[in-house]
Image (tube, rainbow, N blue to C red; front, side):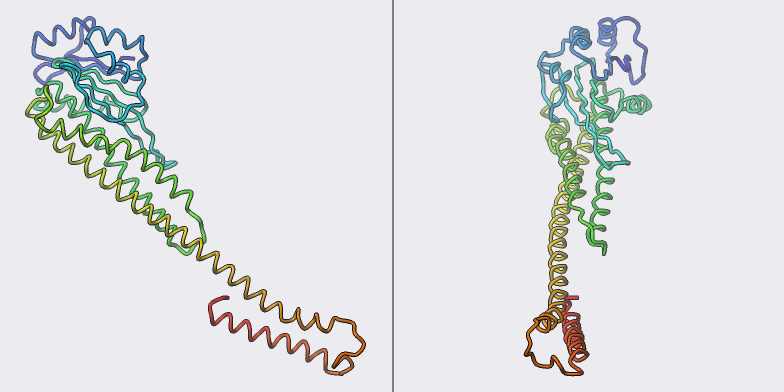
Length: 323
């Protein structure tokens, strides 16, 4: 359950000696903080952490059950932030989502991760190498995690744009293919993407402003940068979705045009075949008294007439674009 746990004092990591309660007490006595990371804990596993850090029951329920939208809430002196984590699968071009919850107090950070996306080990190592930011306390961890998640959004946005361009190229190519299913699947992935990005704009703006207590003043410019990146990614997602809508409409229009072209070709060939059918049908009627039945050149003349009329019709349909 516990992935990592450490005490941070003056921008440096120190190992936890003893239980969580003692680690929290030591951190408070020395102006440090504890960062404990958990992965997919259940209710019983999370109970000990809840008791030691005094976490609110409603926030704990959200953290254990997951399936929450991105949000920022304050429970007393503790901030509770929910982030949607995303992972792009190259093989299928799918976007897999998870969740990341952060409990941030004056001397502790508890991170709860669900899913495989955005592991925090690399975030922790990168933050530990930047003493000047880590000295800002729990706010530094909150910024580092948000920045890592939003950076992932930016990378996925670039991949999605490539997928959209690939679909667009296929739709407007000479190949007679129907890409409606691929377009719809890509729009469905964009919807999942939007659910992660759009609700996160307001929490990031709140953290960048002055309305949230407990955020170190030196970290607010960093949160403004993250908020700007979230807005930019949201605009890119909206642009891709609008472009896909246009591509889908163009694809449907192309399918309709191709069907009309096929019907014109079929109609042209039916008209051409109808001529010899008509002539052969007339002379196939076994009446005794019919013109030219006993004429020596009647048969070759009938064949020549059928071929001539068919040739004229073929040329006319060809010039009009029906064939």
